[in-house]
Image 1 (cartoon, rainbow, N blue to C red):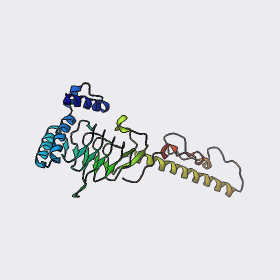
Image 2: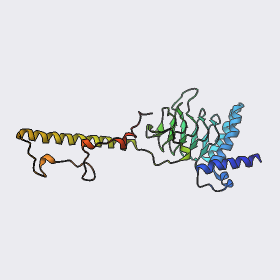
Image 3: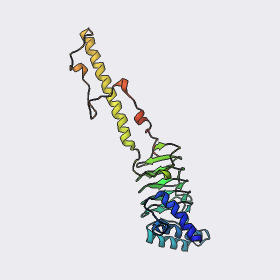
Image 4: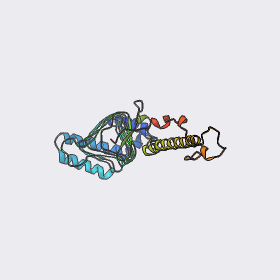
Length: 264
């Protein structure tokens, strides 16, 4: 009955993070379930000093499931790998509770370091498809790594990281990735930078046009209104519509919250 109880508990974990699962028995079809059962056995062998047989078991599971978990890694409760093909977890990795990985994720090293050379993922972390977390770094609780990101420096808790190299683009303590799994609707830091620069450029052009208009009035020596549609009232249209951002209308609130930290 212990095995069946474990099956039910695993089903609840998988159901929380994968809407495709329907019955307890579906759990048996998940590569993650098969890989983790083998990992638990291999890890016990590794801890007891039988390293060869531990590696032998882990390599058997890697060939069958496409998920390579080194028996020396430490993995907590509620761990879930969706699909799983191409996932690699290194020897000195430490993974907390309720962590979610997607296919193609690598938790690896950066070279020939000794000792702790693989990342630590704290509780509630989600790593999206194809992301690489490299080196002896820590990804803080409830953080989310975007698809295809390459993370080589530590990530604080409750952050969202995207890009190559990874950048922090969101930091909100109330976000809990495993309750709102979304690999696609992540901020685009390059697009947001372009928006900031475009707004600033529009503002500068408007100021230059205003100064040119004032200079013309000074040269004429009078303050008579210029003809409608004249050169003094020209505005450059740098947006899709007719509207131009005027200096007294500038508002950076829309993109201000998306300014991100240095490379991480």
